[in-house]
Length: 502
Ligand SMILES: Cc1cc2nc3c(=O)[nH]c(=O)nc-3n(C[C@H](O)[C@H](O)[C@H](O)COP(=O)(O)OP(=O)(O)OC[C@H]3O[C@@H](n4cnc5c(N)ncnc54)[C@H](O)[C@@H]3O)c2cc1C
Image 1 (spheres, helix red, strand yellow):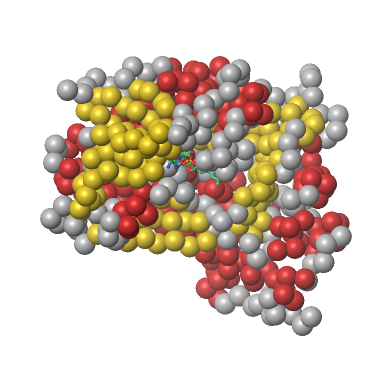
Image 2 (cartoon, helix red, strand yellow):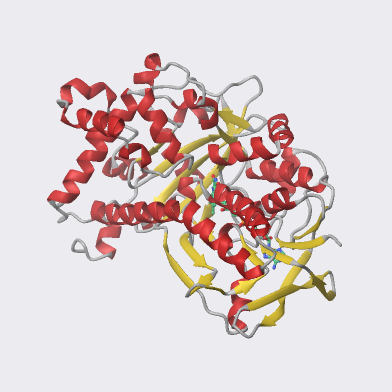
């Protein structure tokens, strides 16, 4: 008899789990409480798809190279369908800084550093329609999973036997051999496990930023602006920004603001302030010139962003059997790094591999946790550490008495006077750096190789005058200038925090 797999949620983790697991001998049912994709194409999906289960559906999305490569390796026809739907591929060479473009020599392997960008509604629509056509897979819409079927075994592990479901007005039970939770950041499965008396290890902390996104469409016959010296994405500390080219002449702009910058983050929700900020950023302004594009959405805001890691093995024992978590239910990361969808997809393929390890549910659960600990957790930790640094930096920006210590000065100098000019001057170093960025190898592996470390250190000791042209251009006004231009009180948050007298 076929193995029965139930997947909670048809978001990224649910869809990638279906892609990873569908095959002979398996029946896969994906249970999604939101409605299906509306009839029509990408524009209808963007304007009409009501996805209450995915609050970030209309925020900018990109698939890192690791995820694009995974799609290419396992489902090349899906990659073609994404391209046909208008999703954009941004190649390694497209991201070269102006200062080093003439030093670039294409190398075999550069194609594995390609990113996909698109409206998320388009990405989801195309992947979902592809999954719906797969033999042995059914996506059930408007079906709410309300509980786990099963019980604790003698070892205190929750043995999952299926799911409780509310389908329209009807409550029923569905039996399964394997359940995958792809229910996202608000997944309730851990709550249901807790109700049964299960405990687990979890770490969670604020990502320290809020996210704001607005969408535009190029006017008829208009094209994206030529790439200038100032990049379309950057980090100014009090604002991080990015332009995301998308499908069918659309693009979005995301501004992210540190949580501590309350004045700015309240203001940025207003479209006129959002647009004003964009106009003040030279890497963004040409995109939104009135003769090039028009806004097609409100400003979407998103808070409560967290880094959260949950472990399904406690004290060497699985907390549950026949239940696997993929996606945000397992690990949430700051969207700034653009790794959430990659995490979800990689985890889905790790579940596939764990199921092949052994017929024993405990061995499978341990194999899966070992795989995510080894393959995902180091990236999680690196991102969380970067968030902690950014949170400190945002606070220090508001504190007029802040004086960095020697260690902080050295770290800043290593980032700004060594790494940044090094990767901006030498495409080979940028290539090495990007492999970590795209999760093709551990984030800092490139710096551990003697040759690359030597080049970076060489850049560090090079006098500034000789490497001047490899420093990034000014990304926009500094904080005081920006607040003045927006007519916002620049010291209100420092006063609120007691860092300066009211
Ligand atoms: C603002 C923002 C921007 C982001 N940008 C990027 C990016 O550029 N690149 C990237 O890789 N990642 C990005 N991410 C992260 C990425 O979107 C998430 O990591 C990803 O969506 C997680 O997939 P998921 O399947 O776990 O959750 P989701 O995609 O949220 O899907 C969960 C699904 O489960 C359904 N569901 C929940 N509970 C039930 C239930 N009880 N019964 C039935 N169905 C249920 C929901 O309706 C939903 O459809 C971003 C995140 C945010 C917040």
